[in-house]
Length: 352
Image (cartoon, rainbow, N blue to C red; front, side, top):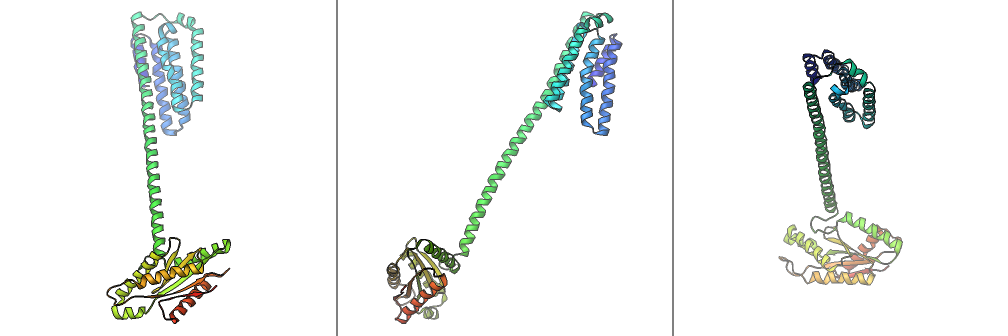
C-alpha cells in the first residue's frame, strides 16, 4: 500500500492522472481493509480482500496505461497474489489465484488493441524508466518476502531441531532417572532382604526363597534339604567377652557357612546366632556332608580374643511332598535340638 502511494503520485506528476488514481485508490482501500481487520480480527476476510486488491491493481493500472505496450511491467505485482496465497493460505488457494491471474492476462491480451487506442503512447524514456522501476521494486519485494519466509522456515527448523534435541535429552535424563530408580529400588530391596550384621539373607528373604523352592519341588520333584545351625554356648561368649566380640563371632560363623556352601545354596540368618541353609537338588546325605564341612571348618578357626575354639551344632532334614515351609523348618529345628542333646558340635539328621 505504501509503494502504491509512491507509484500513484509519480503517475500523477508525469501527466497520467487516471493511472495514478488507481494505485492511490488501492492504497486507501487496502488501509481500510487493514483497519477493519484490526477491529474485527477476521483474518480470512482480510486475506481474501488483500489478495483480490493485489490481483486487480496491476491489471487496472495496465489497462489505464494503454495495455501491454506501456504497462506490461506493472503485471509483476500480480505475482504476489498466488505467492501470498501459498504463504498465508495453502497450495489449493494459491492455484486458484494463479488461474485467476492467467485468466486476467488472457483478457488483457484480448482487449489490448482497444485499450491502446484510448491512451496516447508513453514517451520511450518514461516507459523505460517505469519498466526498470517496476521490475526493480517488484523483484526486490519478492526477494524480501521470500527471504522473510525462508528465515522463518529456517528458524522453525532450528526450533524443531532444538525441540527434538531437548526431547532426546529429556528422554535420556528420564531413562537415567529410571535406571537410577531401579538401581535404588534394587538396593532398597537388597537391604530389606539382607541381614545388617552378616550380609547374608534375613528371615524375610528366607521365607520367600523357601516358598519358591518348595513350589519348584512340588512341580518338578527332586530333592530339597534344609540345615539349621547355631553356635554352641554363645551366651557365655557374650557374657565373657561382650556383645562386640559376640557380633564378630556371628560374622565369622556366617562367612564360614558361605565359604563352605555352594553357589546354588542359600544362606540366611534365622535369628541371633542361628542360621538356616537351603540346599536345592541335594540329598540328605549330601546335606549332611556340607553341614559337616562347615562344622569342622568353624571348629578349626581361632577367633581372638576367645580362648579355645568356637563350635556349632547342626540339624539336617529333607522336604517331604507337599510340606510347607513352617513344617520343614520345625523338623530342622528338631534335628538341631537332637544335636544339642547329643553333646553339641555335631550334625544330626531328621529322616524323611
